[in-house]
Length: 392
Image (tube, rainbow, N blue to C red; front, side):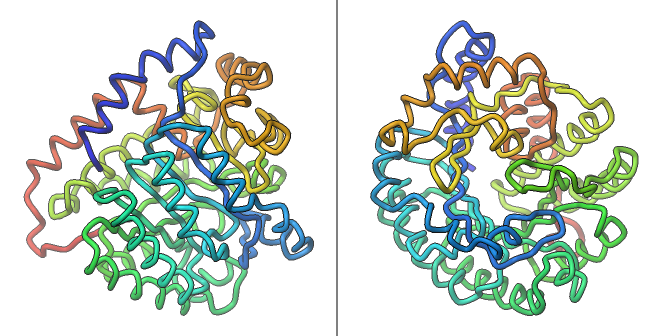
């Protein structure tokens, strides 16, 4: 992570975001844009019904924004910092590299992040290589992270993800991406787990696999009931006490194993430790324990051009539709409908542990950010473990 750029964003936009949350001013551009590039997905995950809905209605992908529409939208947005790609499965879009190229040209991101289910190994690896080659020309020195999902080991992963053979394909995808990581200094492979009621008792097994795979970065997020996932009635989220117990052990391992990692990984882990503590508090207290800046610091663009404050509120609290607004993002961003959504959020109308939003909330909450800085300082002074292993 470019620490100087991150601090610049904080110093310049932090006070403006706080003022916007109070309704005193119109918000400047968001610092984080998440774009679900397609509705298509091969998975049938127990924690998400996007793939199931796509299987029943494959024509949904016909509503994906075209490359020409995406360019018009990005041209209307202005500079951001974090560009997060989402889906569906992002690599099912053959023009994903061109989408990243447009983001580099118009949005000037400081970090690009792409998750994947890892099923289409050839497409993921070759697509990532194309993206990295494009980024070397379009936005040199900008880090790219690609995060294959791992929700279990072996057949358990296939069962949770709803795709027989996913595990073997995931292993091949990881190996292919590791080779790219060795070639491209700005590429960072990481693995990610959704902690749900289906894998609570197997997190140690997953963490052990990650260590054995030699992957430096490993994150987890708690399973959520989101409008985006069409799973609001599914009891998938662990209770607060169980999650707190599990995450305490996970955090302990991070503190022990981060000394041998690169500065980007150390900074990332510093934020994750604070995020994990925040999730425990949100689950326990069921409220916004620190101010939420959804729809101000962050925005989510759905595959069909609907603009959301976040993916949790999603279809329930849209801010507008790009195709009905001349593909002009600023027109939606400064609309009456967007202001009403922000008022709802600022009045504590919702509370959730959404990871992308939580990291921004931490960034703009001085006490939380101070704890992140303290974690980072400790990691900088930490000596690598005796084995020199690079755990999660």
